[in-house]
Length: 388
Image (cartoon, rainbow, N blue to C red; front, side, top):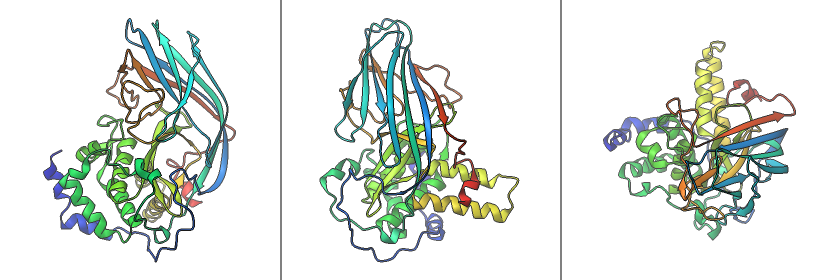
């Protein structure tokens, strides 16, 4: 997409849209009661826990006559929203014992496997139990404390990882966001609204790499493009952000799904799922059983839930961050790890997207089964969940 098309969005009409969008009222921020720490755990209100039996495998086929197949298999960690236990790893047909390592930037843990001279596909299987809670933050932008100098632990979450700071069109949008926002938190919410209005969900034209540049230029992509751009907007506004990849714990073509998290004192890390909220609102708008008044009410409730911070109990966080070195090191740093990362003789195997109807060949694929202890609806496809 040409920059000229993007610049057209920055005129008076676009700014008028910004100004007409409802933003939560702000008030004078209160003094921050907790120390600033990027390692701070989640502080949202927990509810509705679900127990899952997880059986998750990756099936990797290395090219013919590969000498060494190397696979990094991320291991989900326990946090305030999820508890992971009884982890069991196995391989087939060749038995390989993994090396467990943690990368130092974001603390992601990996089970690392080496398959010498692999013959045919290799399967890595991970079985474990997980208890996952819904979490609600009820964010009030007026209570978010502005921070002039972030401690060193936040440096990885404030880096310009996409180079959009030098893009004039991006800077034009950013200045409009700053004009609309009455605080960093309000400007962040305005940037989320901009992404919601301007991006279109598309598996064919997707980067698979949380690319803010792809999202801004193409205005198309899937969850990682949405949230990569939201994260870049946040960092440009002085708000620490991170892309968090995880697993949707229900049947689908590919279970990987990401969210964006922003650090908003005193709430700490708060998740935002822009792409799924956009799809939910589209579902509401096309629901034949709803009246126009009900559609308006449910759509407003969906946007409100997004802005206040919400993490569903059908999603398990696995990896955090972008652009980091794996442990043990791969041939180069990775952009993101969605489900696994694999190399054959030092060459990365291509990322699959089974939801892309144009993709027919895969170097690797996941097989997965998630058994919940009770029937649970996916809140981004069940608009009645907004009644709660």
